[in-house]
Amino acid sequence: MRTRFAPSPTGFLHVGGLRTALYSYLVAKQNKGKFLLRIEDTDQERSVPGAIENIVNTLHWAGIHPEEGVMVKNGVVVQEGSHGPYIQSERLELYRKYGEELLKSGNAYHCFCSPERLERMRNDQQARKVAPMYDRHCLSLTPEQVKEKIANGERPVLRMKIPRDEAVALDDEIRGTVVFQGITIDDQVLLKSDGFPTYHLANVVDDHLMDIDMVLRGEEWLSSTPKHLLLFRYLGWKHPRYAHVPLLLNKDRTKLSKRQNDVAAEHYREKGYLPEALVNFLALLGWNPGTTQEIFSLDELIEQFSLERVQKAGAVFDLTKLDWVQGQWMRKIPLAEFAERIRPLVAVKFSQASNDRDFETKAALVQERITFFNEAPEMLSFFYDKPKPTPVLLANEKQKVKQEDLPEILDTVIALCEGVPEKEWKKETLLETVKAKVGEGTWKLGQLLWPMRAALTGLPYSPGAVEVAEALGREESLERLATARSILG
Ligand code: GLU
Image (cartoon, rainbow, N blue to C red; front, top):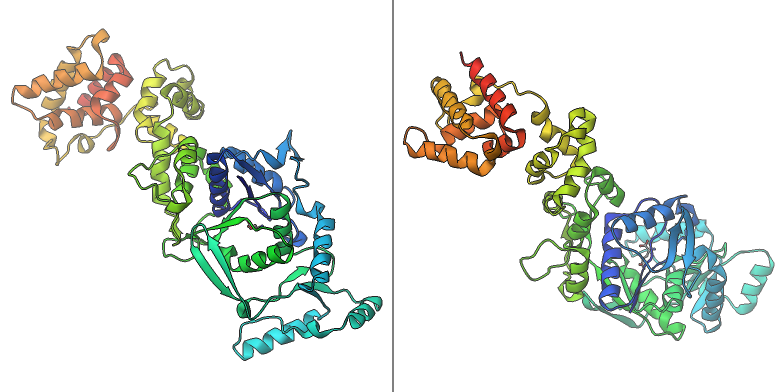
């Protein structure tokens, strides 16, 4: 099984492109096949310098490593494999050769129509409300007329001759059978007057010469596929299988747009999404695993992905879901590794973090709640900044903590904590101690824990009281409780 990803180097890698690459990669890998990267740069005007490096690097970041085709090694674009070159602008001779063949077999013809004439034709068609299509003005030229025009210095394009009375059927892996009437298909330009091929000719020639077994691409290419099927037939080649993956949609179900969303994969990388999270999220955009599992590693995707479970309907790009998946992947990072990832970030704001021996215990508390690494300094700030609790913050209506009870409550909490010796200063012991007090019947659990937590952190929301107390240590905790008590008079 050989699959490929064939982006045009027009700038960044679109998230939809990354999903297509992922699906192609998964299909190749689960069949022990090969996934290759080809660069479709026949539209030279739209090619952007650095775009190839960008695409390759983003794929790598996502964990998708093509084993053939275009690669970047030591910062330089290289090509590897026996089916190269893999950059279309280096294959122009091949396209010309097959263009010639199509001309000879009568499946293509020269067209000399000027851009002005074509525009007039289109305007006229628009005015008559008919689909814009080449009117075959040049199809009737005799070989002699063509020769003469070329001798006169006119530079023709090569057009494909579509059988207008025929229907072309596609057996799509996702969409089933799709039938296109020849009458609706335009006589596509295959070679431009500058000798460059269009996407259609280059795509077909390359998918054949590169032995591609299955083409996975976005649904937006579906209408091009009958042209490709005809080209395969005209050239006497067996066509690959096709799978057109569903569009990505905005929340309002319009096509995913730059205006409503960021569509560059690298934007998500820069924002701090983990590659595992973005890949996991993209895999689920259109693919339904058929179980309740939602978190998948790349290896699990290779094992479980199947085209039969890819839907036809567009898939909504739901950022809330992406953040949830991201959070799940944050929790999966081993604690020691997580702590070392965030420590330098926290140290920028609080230098004490660099040699804080209890940093891991603190990190554990935020790992449960964090979405992005760069939230860590803020989330951990209460450990390094002394809290400034107020009576309003210490009280809590829902927990039935009245301001007038606070002195008594804090005295109780302080006495309880003082009773826990240093070596037993653990969240479990602390909780047991508080619960034992609750057992006496004067206070409810929340009435003790809420003020304790607020006194320790100075925040309305934070990890729980005993967890924070453990992470702060006995001395610091007692000091903070004493401070809170002192403001109450
Ligand atoms: N160059 C096309 C693109 O940019 C490739 C479409 C295909 O995979 O055939 O998406």
